[in-house]
Structures are given as C-alpha cells and as structure tokens.
Image (cartoon, rainbow, N blue to C red; front, top):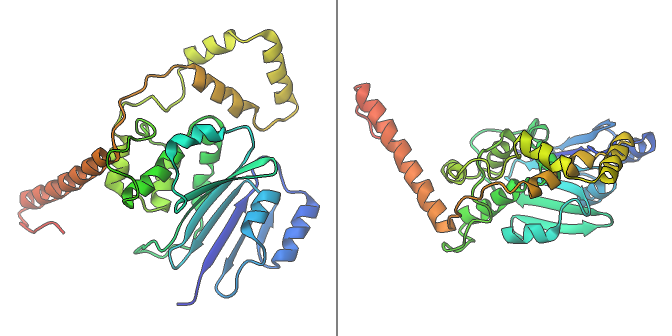
Length: 289
C-alpha cells in the first residue's frame, strides 16, 4: 500500500480572513479550505508547508494521521491562559509531548509513532471529537496532560513509585475517551485512571460558582462584561478557570504509576474471567483468547 497522510487544521478563536485562505490555497490546490479549517490527504508527496508554522500563524488545532502509525494532536493557546508551572507536575516526556512558546502563543504538541491498528483509519472525524480538549484546558481542566503522562506510564518510561500528577481523571469525558482511543492508550489502564473519587477535576457546583462571583469587586465584574461584549473568546474560559481554582474541590488520594499498572492488570484478568464465565453459562466451555 502506498503512503497515506491526513492533515487537518482548525481555527477556533477567529475565522480565517480571505487573504489567509488565499495564502493557504497557494500551499495546496486541492485541500478543503474554509473560514474555520484546512484539510488535505496525501498518497504521494507531502504538505508543502511546515505544519508548526501553519499552526502558529493561522490555526488553533492540528491533527495528523498516517497509515504507518504516526499520530499527532497539537493545540495553540494564548500565552498566559495556561501557566507552564502548572504543567510541571505532569513531567511530560518529550517522546510523547512538547511545550513551546511561539510569539504570544503556547504550542502543546502531542505525538506518537508506529502505533498498530487493526482497522484502516483515514483520520476523518477525530479533530472534531478532540477539539473540546482545548476549551477544557483554557478553562483550567488539565486532565488531558494526565493522559499524556499515562502514555509514558504504559510505555514503561515512568518509575513505579512515581505518584500520579492528579488523583485520576474521574469523571471521564467523551473528549478524554476519544484522546485515549486516538493514541491507543490501553483500555484497562485508562479505566484504572478513572477509578478515583469523582468531582475533584470537574466543575464546581453552581452554588460555589455563584458564591465566588458574588465576592468579586464590581469593577472586576464590569471588566469581565466589557470583555464579553467586545467578543473576547477567552473571557468565559478565564472565569471558569478562576472559579475552579477558588472552589477548593476535594482532592482524592493519589496513587503511584505502579499501582495504576497493577490495577490495569487486575482489570484485564477480571474481563477474561467474566468472559470465561459467560462462555460456561452458554455451555460453550471455550478458553478466553
């Protein structure tokens, strides 16, 4: 089979201007280009531009899929919306993710090579399902970085006595599950990561949000409303992030990487035992695969 590559970019914070779309058309005459995105596929040759440059100049998200197992998902965040010191706890392995500052932006680039999949995947649909993760990060939900750390745990790159950077990811969202599927994170390990006290990573309850907003000075509330009126795409995320930080949500006990691996093994054994029991009840008496 010939090589296959799928590139897809998405603009979230603002639509592409006509001049920008013309510049992109000069890169590819056959790509699907809209005011919010760019998508192209290659069976021969390659994208005639640097994907990182396109991300830095035009877009907020990029997704890349190949038929030899390379996968990439990257997001551009306005500098200051996420503090790099908040990401230090995840100790991200450069084999799986890099964080770079480019101008006024922060680029989070998540990547992996030579994954093996049983089914053909042309890359369609993934970016739409993953795009919510950027909004989550802007709102202070950093659980996607836990999953990057979990990729390193699965690969054996994290010491067994290393504590998890967050007390799990419960409750798991559709976007987090999609991320795990896209990067082929072991299902039992993912399930182990969700087995922590729910609520610590979620949004604070409405009464806590109302109480926090009620304590803010009138001048600050007015400034937020002015930003909202002026179309600031990040004002809502900034408010949610501040509410999350001030909420004092309960923090569950953190486990180690070794404990998560052990829980994943137990989950695998439990699935096999359940499978065998179902076969026995059906009178088939076959062994689990």
